[in-house]
Length: 408
Image 1: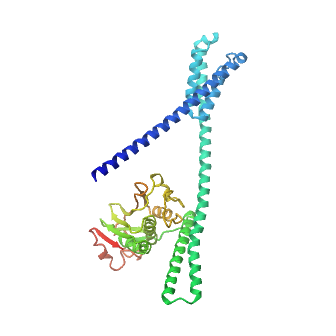
Image 2: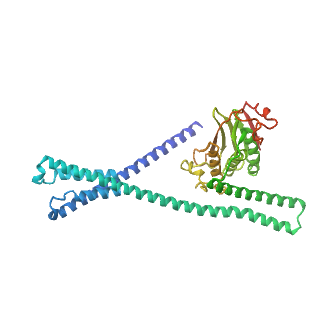
Image 3: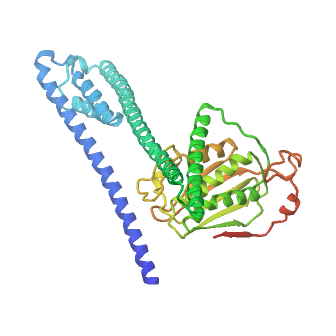
């Protein structure tokens, strides 16, 4: 075991060193290409200077240099333009014969200041145009990516809607035959009910996203016992995990306390995270849901042992319809659950973050919400699920030790 661990550590070190070498070689190749561009542009300026010298003599000796500075800045950046300006200046000072009028120190100083001022102006303008071009290219690429994602999302949405519709249509045809025994009829009705619930949940997510985009989604806040609410949400999500023989373990290492939130939307956050963990985890694994309170916030964490998330996708995973490229699972979904989770958490003054060590190493989603004192609002405020004003709430607040519940 120790030798195997040592070999893994050696392999990780070698991979890190290889990645560092690749980054260094990439930067070195980029620097070499930039220097090559500078050399070619400067050589072209010198050749042009010698070509026009018989016609313009030395009255416009810096004219090719100005062109070279502009071209170098446009192609590579302001550093290349500044380097070309200095090289051209050094060439003119060292190798170019001076005109008798240039022997005057004042005249020489004015010419040098004029050249430097013109070079700075050219570099600034060319750099501004270059950055504007790069920003335009970036915006165009983002628009193309958004259009591609929209097309992929519409195709995926049509596929997700077609599957339950086909199942419901097939169930209707089977029931219409009238030749089924009561057990078969009940099984068909259960199947139709599950697919109807799936369609209803999908349409509800679409409507919620639309309300968020238009600013029409409002919160009905009240005092909520976080542990009780998470417990109810995990119980509801059990239907998704039970079909995949997954266990959900609910932990409370420290008393979570209360938050001033919309219980329906907070319930939706937890259900979305548990369903997401179930979807991207193999059959028979465990999903851990941890609820704990800190001084000023309440943390709800959902840990799975599934396909994991690449480090580069940890922020983008919350964008609408974003799918993990390496994901290979039976049910991918349309990618709206995490988007709704992030937006709803932010509407409550909190946030949700994703953590993963990489592909195949699971993922952990942590929701943090501002913690409210139990006496911050009247005890009967809201009176909904998880509210301290309901009967039995006093007994619920006695859970100050670690609590673990296991759903098979």
